[in-house]
Image (cartoon, one colour):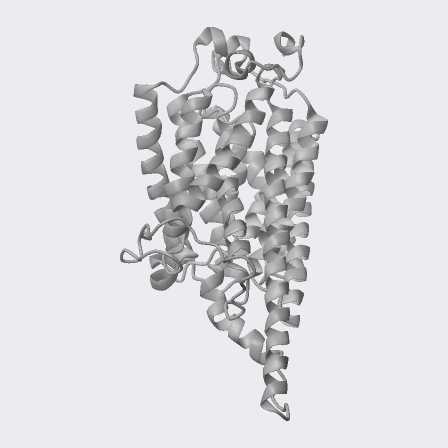
Length: 446
C-alpha cells in the first residue's frame, strides 16, 4: 500500500485526463467538464479510503472478540481494555509522529531512505477545501493509514494475553505505533530503500503490518515467559478459551474487515480498471481464507482425529495474511493454494511453539508472523518482485523490529516490570487490572 500521495501524483492527473472530453468546443466547456471529471474521481477515490478505513477499524472489534473468546474468563475484561486502549493510542501516535516517519515524501524529510523525519503533526485540509489534483481527500488517506497502524498493535495483544500488566503493555504500544511500525512502512510504502534499491513488494502488509506485529509479539513472549502452569514436566497444559462462539464471531469480523484491508489498498476507484481490480482483490482475498479453513480442518482431522475449530479460525486468518502481500496478481487458483499453505503453516507451527515453550495464547505468531513471511516470499511467484528482494525485506523487518522490541521489553521488565505477581496471575487480571469481571462469579471456574 503505497502512500496515496505517491500514487496519485500521477494517477490523479491521469484520472482527470481520462474523464475530460478532449474534443470540447469551447475552453469554458472543457474546463467545466474537467472539473466534473476530476471531482468524480476524487469522490470515488476518497470513498474507497473511507469505506476501507472503517472496515479495517472494525477489525479492532474482531481482534477484541477473538481474544476475549480464547482467553479464560478471569482475563476477559483485561483483553477488552487492551484492545480499545491500543486502538486509541495508535490513533494519537500516528497523528503526532507516525505518519511523518512512515511517509517522508508526504510530510517529513527522508533520511537516506531509512527513516522519515519529523515535521509536525499531520495537517488535514481546511473546511470545504478539496485539492482534486491529488485525487483524494488527505484526511481519508490519513485515516486509512492509521487503522493499519492499529492493526499491528492488535497482533501483540493476543500473544501476550493473561500474564502482562496493562501499563507496560500500553507503553510498548506507544513506541510500536509511534516509531517501530512507521519506520518499517517508510522502507517500502514510503519510498525507502526496500522499494527503491530492492524492488520489495508488499501490497497490503503481509510483512509491513503482520510480520511487524508478529516479531514484536514473539520477542515479547520470549522475554515475558509463558503463563503459570502452561508447561509442566514436559507436558503442555491446555487452557480452554471461555467463549468459542465469541471467538468465531471475531474471526468473521476480521474476515469482513480484510476486504477493506486488501481491497482499499488498491488506493484508487476513480476508473473502470481500478474498480475491476478492487473486485478481483475481494475474490482472491476471500478464496485464500476459504483455502486456509479447509486445509486446517482436513489436517487436524488427519492428525488429531478431530477437527479443531480454533485451528479452523486461525486457518482463515493465516490464509488472509498470506494473500495480503499480493492479492491482485494471482489467479483464483493460486490464491486458494497460497491460502491453503498459510492454513497448513498454522497447524504445524502451533505445536512447534509449544515444544519450544513459547506461549502464544491466540496463535498470532503462526498466523501473522510465519504466514506473513510465507505470503511475502511467494509474491516472487505471482507478482512483480524477486525472491531476493522479498527476502531482504523480511530480514530487514526481522532485525529492526526484533532488536528495538527486545530493548523496549527489557527496559520495561527491569524498571516497572512486565508481569503481575503469581497470586494476581492465578486469580486473574480482571479484578486487579480493571476492577471489572467480564463474567461475574465465573472467573474462578476458568
